[in-house]
Image (cartoon, rainbow, N blue to C red; front, side, top):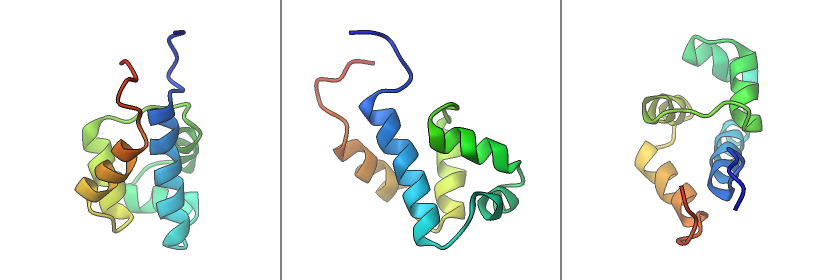
Length: 85
């Protein structure tokens, strides 16, 4: 299996962030303002170009009004059990 950052899990995470942002009616720029970062960072995260760590995960989903544990459960359901790291 080729090593890539673009795994099913990474794609699921990126889509979960983008979907939660859209559901809240926010643009990438709106979310960036809430997180005190640049819009381009949000774009890179949502596109999968930039991975996030667990602390960023928590901050992003809190800013989106989603409990991080619920977001993790939703993303986790989309990751195949046999997918390697």
